[in-house]
Image (cartoon, rainbow, N blue to C red; front, side, top):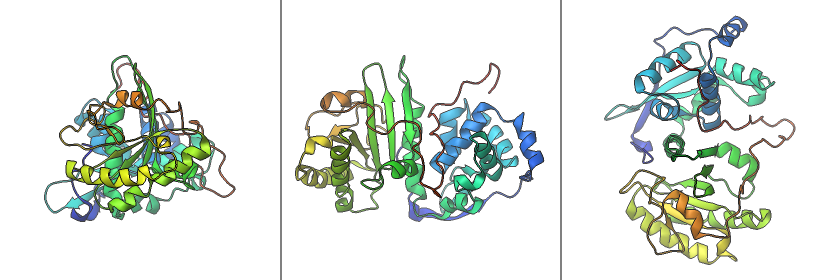
Length: 334
């Protein structure tokens, strides 16, 4: 669900699963994994590394035909130390298992791209830091929205073809603005590039509106006009946010360089459906692939190319962004 199932303050100390025996991260184990890991396993390790944490529910949406198949494979990847996992404690209910990159997975990813693990900036304690981070719920909510997009491909179209994490966006755009994600959505009707902002009601509306000048400066600096999509938790929050956003938007030197639309999971949680309301239009809500018709000034492929720009000396290497869709498996593989 794009709307988080819990609030950050409802989380308690996460439980790290230590019940299952696990393989040591040795050279012999890496050799063992060469013939055991499928293209889907390697893709999943890259996705978890890119997006910091994915829940078992999100992984099912992205890569598996059923929850049973998900549990079986994730259990194996956990025992092989390709993935690590933890489960946030909830006062009421049960949170899904959360997966981060494991030490063997980091070694495989680094070797696959010709780097050392240290070049990726990977440390097990750093990967697990998200478990106690105050941004855990925000990260899960962001990934929820994009996982739903990735799992929903229109008939005859590619669907979500590009998904950048907050870290990758910060590397490319951080001197001007830091969106929660960047996405490219392809359908038979249109090709849409968008910066995504996920609002959970934890920051003031003033802070939310202050992000617009950064997008304005980015558009003027690059000459590329890209829409900004803001997902809000409730209809009431959206109404108040639109007032604050409109005041700031109209004060920009050229508001047309920041085409903006808002949406909430009320009443529909489908981000591809008619839930998006352009800020400069009082008309009906529009579906995702119909938004581009509202703004003829939009650029095509507004963000940087899908290949990673050279990193500064000493900086952490960002691997090429994994495709949002799981690679095709051999017949008979599940």
